[in-house]
Length: 318
Image (cartoon, rainbow, N blue to C red; front, side, top):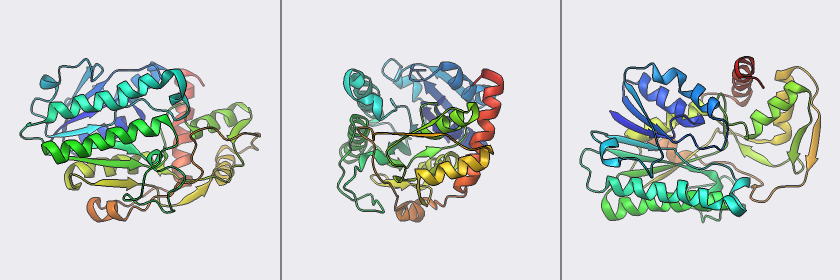
C-alpha cells in the first residue's frame, strides 16, 4: 500500500499515519498547518513520523498542491484534512469551512477521476451530520439534518464523495466519527479543556445541564477502523464509528475527578448553537464490513489522554 493521508499532523490523522506505517505501508502525508490551534502541537504530532523512512511529508494546502505529483503511485487516500469546530463555523469564519471542507475535497476527488491503481478513497465525516431529530441509535440511512455550518460542509463533502463514486467510479467510502478523544486531542475539544482546567484548579465550563449524551470513541479505535476501511470498506457506503456506549457529560466529569484525584469546580452555562443533545452510533455495518470492535473503555481512554497531557504540559507548558 502507498497511502496519502491528508491533515496528517492533526489529532486523528497522525495516529492513523502511525497505524499505517506499523502495517508496512508507505505514506505520504500532507498538512497545511492552519492556524485553528497552535502549530507546535501539530509539529509534536509529526515528530514520531518524520524519522520513519517510509514516510514523506508535504507542507501544503490541498488547494495549492500539485495533485498529479502528490497522487503518483498512490493506492489509498485517507482524507482527514478539514476545518474543524462546530461553534466557530458560524458567522465570518464560514468561508474557511467552505474552502477547506468542500472545495478541497472536490479538488482531490476530481484529481482521482480516471486514476488507475487507486483502490480506496476514505473520507472522514462526522456524527454532526445527523442533527437532533435522528432516532437513537443513529443509523447510516437515516435522514440527515446537521445543526451547524460545520456539519453542513462535512455533509456536502460526504455527498461529493458518493457522487464521484457514482459518476466517475472513484472508490470512495466515508466514516462518520462519533466524538473522538484521546492523546493529541485538539485544545478546543472538551476533554482537553476539562483536564486542563482540573490541572490548574480552574472551573470546568459545561454548556447545558450535563445530561446530554455522547458516544465517545477512543482515537486508536477510530484510526484502526479508518485503516481497515481502506481494505474492506465497500465503495459507496458510509460507516458509523462509535465507542459503543452512550454516556452523559456529568458521568465523564465523575471519571475525570477520579483520574485527576481532586474535586472539580464546575460552572454551567447556556447550551451553544449547533451542539447536539445526544449521539449514539449503530455500528453494525462497520462491524460487518470492517470487523470494527472498540477495544478501549472510556475510563482507560481518559487516563491515556491525561497521561499524554501531563507529558505535553511538562515539555511545552499548559
